[in-house]
Length: 611
Figure (cartoon, rainbow, N blue to C red):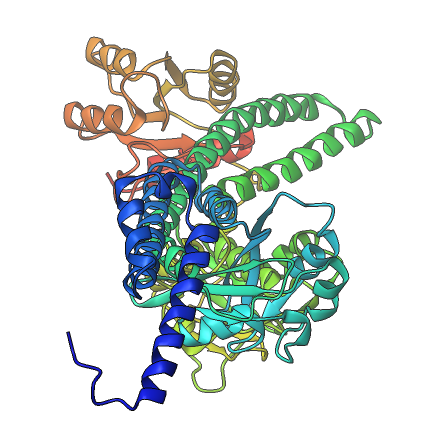
């Protein structure tokens, strides 16, 4: 032990007095602060003895307290991470995962409110996503202010964490100049706050913030460590959960598309029945009959119903792709009249047509889908309203192109977001509000038609999509299979394959009145057996694309192999056979619903065409 002889007597006395006072203070602190269980243990007795004789007791006690706190923090972190690993992976979606994390962090730490913030659609701001508190009514004014709030990078507590990518601590939010919700926080009594980032693949994908009633002048390392550990694990889970959400959303859209297609198929069969029988009635009425007006009204209503069904199929992406000459200006004008209902009253939709036809060659339903997706994206970028302009024109730079322009006054996009908008499954919308497939589908349709897309957008300055399509010459080709015409008297033998008994009967009657001999089959395999059993020529196979058992495409392939000199004409209201299969090149398709005149005209065209 070092000698104290070198110290003066006065100094030595003072030193001894200090030791005695400190020893007494340590003994008192030990008696007051040490838990009873610790005092009664052998370690407590050892510490008590050391504390009465030297500084060792104090140092040992403080060290043990520190180790106990560290052990408790580690146990809490481990328990929380295990809970997150179990419950977050099992959560229905990312929102449920975040709300569970907020609840458990608040319950463990004692903080009264937790919030989650996610980047906005254009990636330029943070938007409120979800919150958890056990005092919903008490904190209602503050929560209402949060739900309507957005933060720029560096603004407020969430924006500060988002910009820095690091946790942030506020002693008293009511005194913080960079806390826009200070008045609401003061009204409900919130004071201390902390924010932490959730990162995935090197970028902040969400921000969590937490609040308590009392000011917190010092950073609590244990709390920061606990929440940061949870946020780090949550980032990996959240990235996977968001990907799962997008996948589930795509599955929902797939199921919805199947449902829409199935409904459209049955509805188009019914419309074909209505149109055909109505035309039979109309043909039997004299020119001056008052009943003709009613019959013509039925035909008009059926045309409108057919148009609605086509839009349903276009929405579900299950419309048979048939390219034809289309006046893009007329198509956009017709679509905009219906899209006005979609965008709502808060958005002003203006259509600027061109005085001359703008002919392009593409599938009309796909063009409607392009316009629909661009308009829906524009609407979502203007949640508080704005102006949406659709224009079709001849670009000054080229006489060989047609320009479709869709411009909005919405939030706009950052350069980073703009570079990724055509990637499949990329979306900046909240989970459940987008699949990330809309613009990638637009890109595929435009490129498939030989066109290109340009995008101009800046945050808070709106967005403009410019779609360039090759211009073609020649008249528009009607896609409406209800157009009127005068077919000539037919000759020949037709094999009709249609599974709907009522529809097959009305088609047989229409063909027979048109001069054709008709063989009937309700299934594909039945049609092939009938063709095999007949020695005489069969001039045309008229088959529905959707048949039970052997589908129409497979039936036509086998029929063509057995009777190569015969022609084939498909008909369908829902051409989605085999998902990855397409109609054979050069094969005609008659879209349901159709009138008897349209049926006979298409049969005539198919018989006159090349083999």
